[in-house]
Amino acid sequence: MIDEHDTRLQRIFDERVLRILPPPRAPRRRSKAGLVGAAIAVLLTAGGFAFAADVNGTAEAAGLSCTDVLSKVEIWFESVKNGTIEQQIQFKQKAAELVGQTCNPNGEKVPFANKPVVPASQPMKRPPTDMTPECLAARERAKEMISGAPTATRAQELELKQRVNEMIAEPCQAAK
Amino acid sequence: MPLVREVPLDLTHADWVSACEASYPKVYRALVAMGASPEDAADALQDAFEDALREHRPVARPDGWLFVVACRAWKRDRWRHRIFRPLAALRGAGQVMSRDGEIDLLVELARLTERQREVMVSRYVLGLSQAETAELLDIAPGTVAATAHQATALLRERLLGGSK
Image 1 (cartoon, chains in turn purple, brown):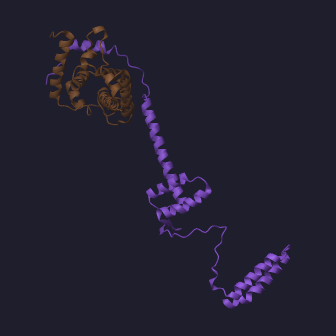
Image 2 (cartoon, rainbow over the protein chains, first blue to last red; image 1 turned 45 degrees about the vertical axis):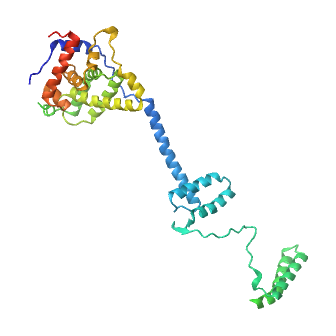
């Protein structure tokens, strides 16, 4: 193999190439586009993690930590729409209805039983079907006595309570 | 004549790094002759230096090794620029211009194919032999000889007016 080397060409190369002055070595330039891209990537990643944490947190607060991802996102969306505490209590109920299931304390899926909501101001009363007419009459009389009697002190109140209990004890005891 | 086996066995990492430092101007000029802008050449060479610091194999020609590694880094960057900034890359395509119509070596080198340019720069800027060039560029020595012959003829014709 002949190592062909042109000396005139070498001279031209030397003359031209020596005119190129190398700059001192410096750290690599970082382009603005690269920095912006990196910042966006970091923001998107952090945002993704924050969103996932928020979605999981909302589902957990609604007692539905065991549901699937799409349901969790739906619950999260509903919670964003419902701002106040009252709305959030309603939302919790609604979320369970929406998903059709709830989670037990062990984190397992349990079907949601659609029980009627009883407001705290109206306690559930036992239906008076098992009461005898004597018992009902005694209760009515006791009510009248309570409304008519003065209960200024604690002692008077206790005395009245005892009398009422005695009054209704006999007829109502017989019914049981 | 393998480049790797030529190295003396007592070459330390510090010797290797200082040999790379010493060949910086030559490799920078080679990259500019290849068509890289001064900024791109400096960046590509910086990348090659980072690789050189991690390199533990003994290499006979640090300048040739740096040139090949820096060329790869420069080509990678060029692709990234083409993908993300197509207009900027188009503007940069005609960057090598002669001054006032002067016949310029860099302009004539830019008219050669990339393989011809690599071979000519390795031979005439880095001063590598045909065998060293073949090993560095990972091509057959016969291909280097043929490519160098064609490119030399073209440059002779364009720069020296075809005189032998």
